[in-house]
Structure formats: C-alpha cells, structure tokens
Length: 470
Image (cartoon, rainbow, N blue to C red; front, side, top):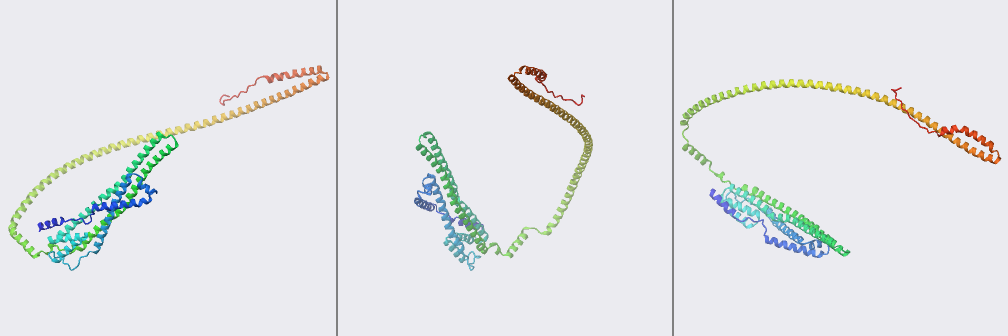
C-alpha cells in the first residue's frame, strides 16, 4: 500500500499547477498598451505642467512610466483572474449522493474527471485530492496531499509577486537617478554661467540652465514617488485578495471534502486483529509458569546485590557527611572569630568617631565665641570711627563758616575801597584834597592789618583722634 500511495502521489504531483500564473508576453503587451494610452492622453496637455513633467524631464520619466505600466498590468490581470476564481469558489459544491466513502466507485471517478474539466483553481485542487484518494483509498494520503498542495500555492503566490515588488522598488531609484542628473546639470550650468557672465542676456541664459537642471532633479523624484505609491497600493490589495482566496479554498477542502473521505484503518476486522495478536503471543512467548521460578531467583540475587551496593553507598555517604560536618564546624569557628574581631574593630571606630565629633563641636564653639567677640569689637570700633567722622565734619563746618566770614569781610573791603575812590573824586572837585588824603591815610593805616591777615594763606587740617590715645 505504501508503494502504491507514494507512486500515486508522485504521479499526481507531476501535474501542472499554474492556475494563478500570468503569461509574461501578455503582461508586456498590456503594459505597452497602457504606456501608449497614457502618453497619448498627455499629448493633449503637452504645454501644461503635466505634459512638461512627462515629456521634457529626461529619459528616466519614460522608464519610470514603463515600469509602472508593467506593475499596473500585472495587478489588473491578477485581479481579473482572482475575480474569476472567487466566482468559481462561490459556485462549487459537492452533492450529498456522491459516495465519497467508496473510492472505487464509478461516481467518484466521474466526479473527479468532471472537476478536472472545469479548469478553475478550486476544482483542480479538489480533483487532484480525489485522484490521490482514488489511487490510495486512504483519507490520510489525501489529507497529506491537500497540505502539500496548500503549501505549494502559498509559496507560488508569494513568489509571483517578486517581480512587481522589484519594479515598485526600482521606480523611486529611477527618480533618484533623475535627481542626480538634474543636479549635475544645474551645477555644470552654474559653473559655466559664472565663467561667461558678461551681459544681461548671458546671465538670463545661465539662470535658465540652472533652474532647468533643478526642475529635472525635483520633477523626476516627484513623478517616481507618485507612480510608486499609485501602483503599490493596488498591488498590496490584490496580494491580500489572493491570500484570502487561497484561505477560502483551504477552508472549503477541509470542511466540505476531506471529512467525507474514508479512512482505511477504520474498516479493519477487530476480531481478526485480536486473533492474530493472541496467536503471535502464544507462538513466540514462553509459558508464564516456566518464567516464575527464574524470575524469583533473579529477583533475590538482584535484591542482595542491591542491598550490598546500598550499604556501601550509605557508608560512603556517612564518611562524606562526617567530613562535611567537620568542615562546617571549622567554618563556624572561623566565622565566630571574625565576627568578634569585627565587633571589636567596630567599637573602636565608634569611640574614635565620638571623640572626633566632640573635638569638632568644641572647635566650632570656640570659633563661634571668637566670631562674636570680634563682631562686638568691630561694632565698637565702627561706632568710634563714626563719632570721629562726625566731629571732623563739625570742625570742617566751622572752618567753612570762618571762610565765609572772611569772604564777606573782603567784599566789605571792596565796598570801602570804592567809597574811598568816590571820596577822592569828590575831594578833587571841592578842593579839600589834603584833608581827604589825611583821612584816607588814616583809614588805610587801619585797614593794613586786616589786609595782611586776609593775604595770609590758610590751611584746613582734619585731625582724627583715636579713642584709645586720649
């Protein structure tokens, strides 16, 4: 049976399973049609920004649109095929009158051939599973084949999207290549503009070259990113749509088809199996009574050997236990000694710390008392100095007042001199000059001491008296 099942599985697995594959030349043809249609539509908007973006920004724009057209063609064709398979999944059913528990039945074989002719994915998978079941007659083989088929389609679905994923990844790279080309053009144009900038027209041409290169740089990246987003979202949705289709087919096979198949092991004759087992035991095993005496002898010998070995091991364990106890006692004594030494050291350190704290407190108190005395002495000295400054200020005020009196006397002297001049002039007029001169001489004689006193230099001296030197 194993040879038959393996041969049937290899024969069935040799069939083609490409129901969800898409023809590559057909994809390229659809992509070319999309490319031509897009540029034909954009030809109507050639003078607008959209036309300039697609037609006048370098070769990378054409390549990016072509790759996006290929991805769009794959997405569209995949969706059309998956939509057809979804309709087939919703339409298929297995009639109750088909005896699937009888793999040799003609109705089962006819049902399997009809599924093969149907051509859709769910029918082909059910057909292959029924073919393996008909050839093996066992549901386990069919179940194993169904699991193999499911894993194959999952792997094939994953690999079928590798090319469009690569193209979606390559479209932004083309945009970056166009960006590098545009920036290179702008830099070259700017360097040429700096070398040949002579008049206004040349400056305008140079600025146009620079801005044109920057426009190429930004527009290529813009178009590439836009196209990658536009084609990537439908591609992801279609991939998810295909995953749901494969999951729905697996659910249909596991719920509707496999439970109705027959398991070969359930139809074995239990009585025949019991008789075969009993005959095998009677023919190959000795009489139980003949085995009792040797078993008892063996058990006694084993018990004696076990007891001797156990006593030997117990003695070894006791020796090891005594050594361990001695070692534990030594360790305990060492730990006690170390603990006593540590407590002694800790007590000494505590006493030293207390003495140090007392010395620090004493020093702080002395410093605090000295600071208070110094502050009081400084306050007294400050009061004395302020008193001395007040006395000096008062003496200075007296000196200033004396100076003000002297200046007033000097102004009186000027007034007197002016009056004398007036008197002289009047005496000249009245011919009493001699008498007036005598009077003037007398007055000048009286004023001479005052003038001498006023002409003397004056010096003001501020003397600071120390309160301790009285």
